[in-house]
Amino acid sequence: MEVFEALKSNDLNLISNDGLRNKLISYYSWSNNILNEDVAGYVKIIEDASLNIFNTRFDALWNGNYKKYKATENWEDLELEMIPNDYEELKQDKAFMYFLRSLKNQYYWKIEVSLNSLNERANDLIKSIDSELKIRRNNESTWFEMTLCHTHLNDVHPGVLTRQIINTVEKPHLAKSYH
Image 1 (tube, rainbow, N blue to C red):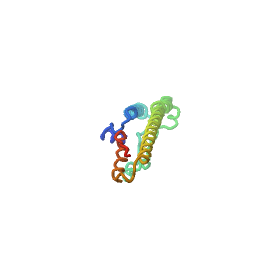
Image 2: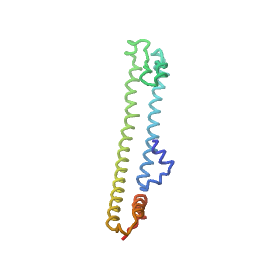
Image 3: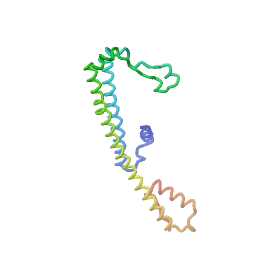
Image 4: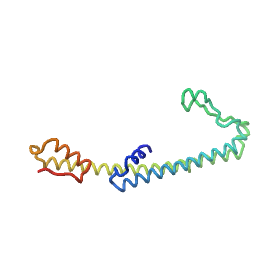
C-alpha cells in the first residue's frame, strides 16, 4: 500500500498505459476497502463474544505478561490466556461450542475468501505489469538496435547518442534516427 500511496503522491499519470493505471487504482481501492471491512466484521464478532459469552465463562479476557512485552516488544512474550471458570462445564456449554464452531466458519468467509480473491486480483495485476514491462523492454531494445545500425558513429558525438538513447527510453515518441 505504501508504494501505491507514493505513486499517487508523485502522479499516477507516470503510468502511461491507461488500462494498467486503472487496474492498479481499482486493485488498491478495492483491496484496502474489502479487507478492512471484512477484518472489522470478524473483530466485531469476537468483541461481541467478549461481552456476551466470555464474560460469564472466563475469569478475564486476554490476561498476559504485559510487563515482559513492554520490555521486549515481542508479541510472543505476552503469553495471552483466558482461564475458564469451570473447564468441564465449558466443554459441555452449547452456546460456547456453537460460538467456536461459528467463529471458524466466520473466519473462512470473512477472511480467507477475501484473501483468496485478493490474491487472484493481485496475480492478475502482476501479470499485467509483467506484460507491460515486457512490451516496453522489447520496444526499447528494438529502437536501441535500430539506432545503432542506422547511426554513423563517426558522425555523431557520443554525448548526442547517449542523450538520444536516454530520450528514447523516457519518451520513445521523441526518438530521432541519425544517418
